[in-house]
Image 1: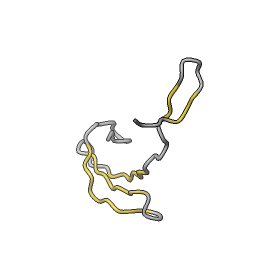
Image 2 (image 1 turned 180 degrees about the vertical axis):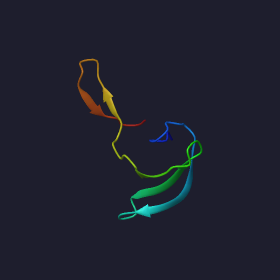
Image 3 (image 1 turned 90 degrees about the vertical axis):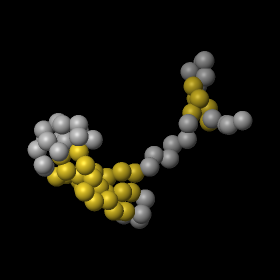
Image 4 (image 1 turned 45 degrees about the horizontal axis):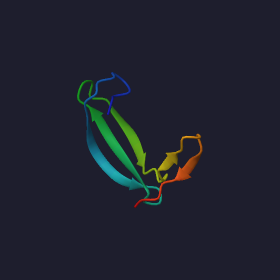
Length: 64
């Protein structure tokens, strides 16, 4: 993950905890470049895949 302060691409996770109703993860991160700490929140995206047909319409993906 990129540091929002110095834009170095290398950070490490210091702490991870479930957040809210247990459907999100809160992570404390530390930049290896400037040693700044920041928090990120992660949540699963539950959108189902869609097919785009040749006429431009969209339809649910139905596996085999």
